[in-house]
Image (cartoon, rainbow, N blue to C red; front, side, top):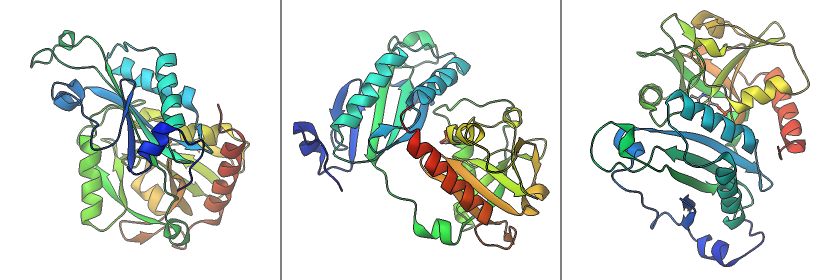
Length: 300
Ligand code: PLP
């Protein structure tokens, strides 16, 4: 644990695992509380972002806040805080953190209900909650061995770019199914039989030197790692393409992406080794380029 810029708050928070900002006030995990009438708690009526810092700078903060607002629009949640107010709170929390690099979950709920009931008018002001903890490096075995995944057939298959809402029930079911089969996670499959994404990650394959990922229309969250890979200088040709289970099983390489994990090789799906069953050399090359790219461009 590295202590940088010590101040009274970071000294107070150094002993706790989490530093949590609730509507502008900082708490540790034992004192952070929200109302039982919060609509995020009552109905999953919230949107959120997971992100991280690189060298105390937030990764693509303005894009994360844009996506938070885009998710809010998709569930008709009218933000009562501006993008600037949210950014200010995120930056304040980073400043208060005793850690060099942190994981951050930024949650915006529709607010506290004045009564039970679904009517959004029952709440007036949003709650903004920013939960942070020190980010741990990816376990070494992720790169030396790669992950194993299963397929999970989705019951609900909305199409198009998905909101990142507080309702992750289907993803939880998929993740639970994976854990019960001793896999790392599940690749979710939509009603048309196309693989969409992991439960908290985007999915990619490499076949004959071309990198493929499913298009948003298949029902995919537009991951910011995914977006960044499309924006960075091309190491390999990259295309959006609907992927069947077979495409994945017959891929030369497979990997997942997320802001907090970067790129992680997948070496087994449903007990079938992908390619030669080892982390793909092209995947590892892409990871290297990605880390170089975000290292240079972490502040934007
Ligand atoms: N897909 C889902 C369902 C997710 O929850 C996440 C991240 O939490 C991602 C994809 C990857 O998005 P990002 O690269 O922005 O972390």
